[in-house]
Length: 247
Image 1 (cartoon, helix red, strand yellow):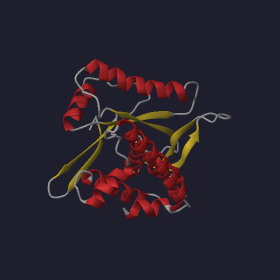
Image 2 (spheres, one colour):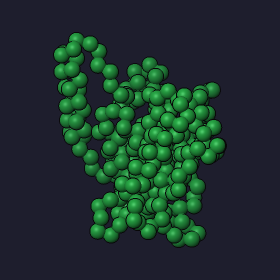
Image 3 (cartoon, helix red, strand yellow):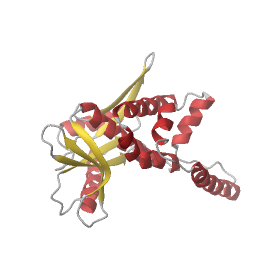
Image 4 (spheres, helix red, strand yellow):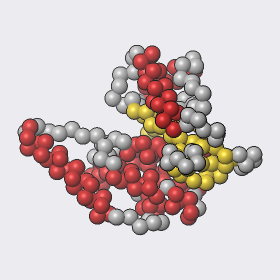
């Protein structure tokens, strides 16, 4: 995953600190195992995918290839100063000890998708929403034609462990996550903003389920873009899709 390291090494990084974080995490898992005498199940991490690839067990090949293509694309679309802007996001991928690392993968995948449209200039991360406030949005873009600014806040919604059967429950869950983000960050601001959900699912059937809800207008909130979802196919090579439910 050479492009990941080329992106993150534009600024110094403390690998000792990363080792310490995961060392503490492993010690907690060992203590739980010694206490209960049973296997301890934990969420997959970024390292799980990398280790799976190294061990050639095939379990993480699809995600590894997706991450590889994502980091390669970012390395092409970002200049040196912009690469420095995403350094903290890359670092957060390394230090998350559970599936929440996907939140940061989601942020970078959204950034990459926006850059590939060639309609916006990427100007900043953690842009302060209001003067004198520490509340920030994930990204600041400038429309190349109108020169108007656009704040973008990414919210990852995890449905990997949910049975997508009760339509209203799923709609309420998605809307509550988006509404919570709006209420926590954007109430009272006069700066233009969009909430960009990324919904992580188990399989293509879940995505079809969500697309039906979206087509019926069930998943619509003011200032919210159509959610992104991810899936991949393997024929001879991996075919990755990070696309909106409206696509």
